Image (cartoon, rainbow, N blue to C red):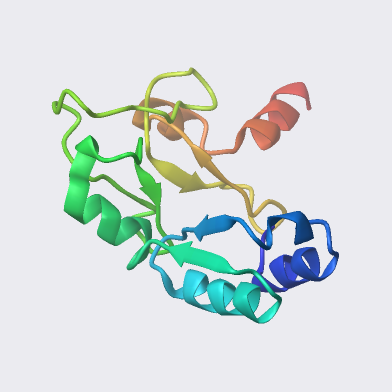
Length: 144
């Protein structure tokens, strides 16, 4: 689902009614969408609805790399991601990889093929300098 409206349609479809008597937990980046979604679920008959207070951001601040969240977190500002600890930490998990060479990275970029492409993609700095495009646009440019 990409929007709250999508979530409402899913709830109203009835395909999750089997979960109404089971514990459900929601999580989101900062906790605001979960507040809304938890209320919607309760209003639609879900009995036991929980959420992570403050979202994954507050969870990560509290537990760092030793919690249950693995990897970095995509955020909706110029940083594009945030880490909850240091890569030197033994509990750190690297999940992101460059779409061009496969090198480990957590750095998101906007595709340079604007305004046609509005995708964000993971890239290492070296590949970003030589190929500032998402994987699809880079492939299209190479075959043109």
